[in-house]
Amino acid sequence: MIVAEQKSLEEIKSLVGNAEKVLVVGCGTCVTVCFAGGAREAAIVSASLRMSSKLDGNPKEVTDVTVQRQCEWEYLDEIAAQVEAVDVVLSLGCGIGVQAIAEHFPNTWVVPGLNTTFLGLPTEQGTWVERCAACGDCLLGLTGGICPIARCSKSLLNGPCGGSIDGHCEIDDEIPCGWQLIYDRLNSKGKLDMLMDIQPPKNWSTSRDGGPRKIVREDLRLNEKEESGS
Amino acid sequence: MTETINGNGYLSGSNLERILKAGHFAVTAELGPPQSADGNVIRHKAGLLKGYCDAVNLTDNQTAIVRMSSIGAGTILVQEGLEPVIQMVCRDRNRLAMQSDLLGAHAMGIRNLLCLSGDHQVFGNHPGAKNVYDIDSIQMVKMVSDMRDKHIFQCGEEMKGQQPCLFVGAAESPFAHPIDFRPYRLAKKVKAGANFIQTQLVYDINAFNDFMKKVRELGIHKDTYILAGVGPLKSPGMANYMKANVPGILIPDEIIERMKEAGAPWAGKSKDELTPDDKKARAEAWKEMGIRICIELVKELRQIEGVAGVHIMAIEWEEAIKPIVEGAGLYPRPVVPLPAPQTA
Image 1 (cartoon, one colour):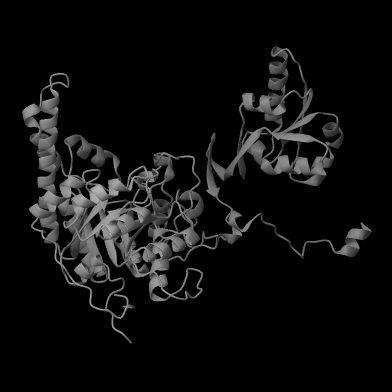
Image 2 (image 1 turned 60 degrees about the vertical axis):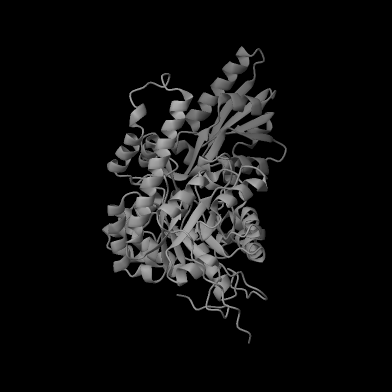
């Protein structure tokens, strides 16, 4: 999932500025699951903004609504009337949600309430960790299902640097060394020989380095006839 | 070894390559460029090292702190008549910048390169920087070897005209984790084309012997020249700090005890009781012991089959190189002339 965390109320207040009518929009998918921007968080942020603006002596009219997914036009259509009635939308979606609102409602000023952090998973209650860097050319088949791009601080492809200590990364005791994990896993599977091949320089053009990315699936596209007929 | 390309039997013709190929026990030393644009710092340090080592290693933004570039400092060394080994890390440059800088390095007379991953930028003075890590150190070794031997850029395009002829090195930390994988990772670096290897600081000869035994079993020492890393300790505090905090550094208790004993005449006195002269004398006693231990280590390493030389890292203490090299019986340094190029 996409993992995000909330910006501070201070920053949110400064982003909202002197807008009088504010709509806080939550998102019912990834950011709900990571407790950053679901219906519950939208209600809390909304109430916090109302109270703090009152205390500041300039009360704002703050309401909130949560859509199933901010990243799909059809769900955004459902809140069109509410969006148009306010001065600013505070999106508690990920960066995709914020941009979808800006694109779908060109007349509306939208600001982010979250910092979109990474693609990852919860390892235990209250803890999320990064797992994927969305590089566009998955290497997990070479490394026993552990990603060296996302989980090695230097994204090394040919084994560990000299900096790990007792299985943790040199940059932080709390970060497991990605290559120690890969080594242990391949070792346990009797596949250490896989590490002896020299991996060539990666083609990063499938990653962000190739510019903004796009996928077009001809098999899924509506053909022109169907489109004009619908 | 890779076939030679210069018609003179050498890959690069560097002094380091000639010394090693001739079978001499090589000595290299480390020089940290300044955090300024002052070339005289390099010239001063060069003066301390000249004649006492076969090549001088120049760090590349070591510990992720901005310093004069290794290529800039290396060019000064060439002008001063010393031979540089420039370090290059994967942290700061993508493959375009690396290749372009190496073309320039060759053109400036630089003939040795040490390929490194580089310390992560969080340790340095620009922790908010974006890192690169476009390629890793093993890929860099291969890229540079291919530029030299196959006349190609990393993309596969042919290089027209003079290729950069660099004697290519890589680093190995024998006691870093996962420790069982280290000899194999070394083998990988050599397979990628590493002509020489520089190890992390060695203080534990027994542990290093075990490592070298594995290296010999794998036959790696026959395909590359291994330079064991050594460095004089400045104080027992430095030894304890490195032992506790620097990954891959093992320091036997016996060495730490000897360092402590060197300061015994001043032990038991609080900081306030020690006069500035006391502190100075104690520092000198520690340094003297550090140098003595280093000399012993060099002598022991020289006896290990497969160790082709030593790389002395006397961090911000270049004055120590002379007594270490002399004390280890490695002075004067041998001279291996470069044969005249064969004309077609």
